[in-house]
Length: 484
Image 1 (cartoon, rainbow, N blue to C red):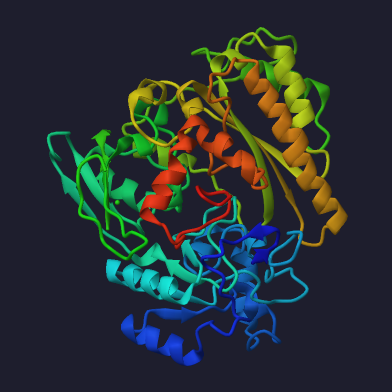
Image 2 (image 1 turned 180 degrees about the vertical axis):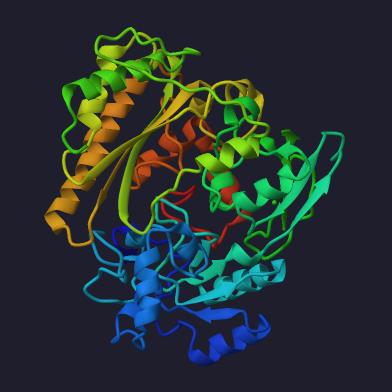
């Protein structure tokens, strides 16, 4: 079955048009086994469309006003931060039901969603999906740039309500630790950990889920250079497998996750590119000296009493609810130092000329991330030599012409990614090549290239692990392991 250019595995072909798709009676019976936790999907913005649902002007105004805030989408069973991925049109251009849409339909949103509050709800969802040959669309908060948390005709699994934490002074002789249930968001985790004078490696955005896609992709944050990637700090995972079995926790092996905690302008001016290139070229140094002509750098240092005192006033308000793409690569130190001309050329070339462009340079590697190269994880080996995760972003309005959207998409995948790839290679590359952070990358990376781009040489083993634990393809998502 093909949906928007994405080929779904034959093992999960059922769609609402198929005779084998569950009937209303089937869904009702399934809901009874979940004690009423099954929710029929209504697109979040449908209150703005009288033809899609009863008109509710007050609800519509609230949704319209808060559409770009992550908490709105996180608190809805099926809504996602990047609504364009819920579109079942080809090519993807905008979401199927947004406050600015001309119409409202289901698109690729799940038909029903299980509101998970216990592990048994997840087990029930897996069994039902496997028996009925349904695709599972797993969502926690809805943060995802690659469209992995929706699916046409899917059964949604909403992990947001599976809350809980437990602290350990000494876990298996490995020091302080905390177990985190899958629905916990990083803001919640940070608050509880801080009460004990401790810190944990997590995401920059407090509404991002602490487990799930963030952790499985490696996970970076403000404390990564000091304590490593989030995945580096996992002591134990307990998981519900594709067979619906809750695995027993064993150290170093997936209901709890055990984490280590530690004592606490569209046409830029030419001078702009000179300054940005100069700064990036000096990032590997402890201090940036203002020696570039016409560049004035003002720095301010401030001492904080704790990590949380520094974090909370500086939370980056991530905008959501729009159409967006990312081009990114992990850059080693050698690609940055004394490489002004190449950096400048790369940024000028990679910066989109159409749409609303942006650039994010994340100093989330080196330090302990590099020192953890001996750990047996699935993260791309490029992380262990990276100094910077450089991202070029671009967004566009819902009413942008299709031709414009396709041009933006091609530029992002071919020009922006190509330029960043070339810059990364100037720093040298090992046998695994250069790589990208899987959670913040080009969503239209070719499927045949995804393994090498996101996991490097580690990918050779990953499909075999996937086949061993999920031989029937119950778990599937685009650009994930085994999605080829």
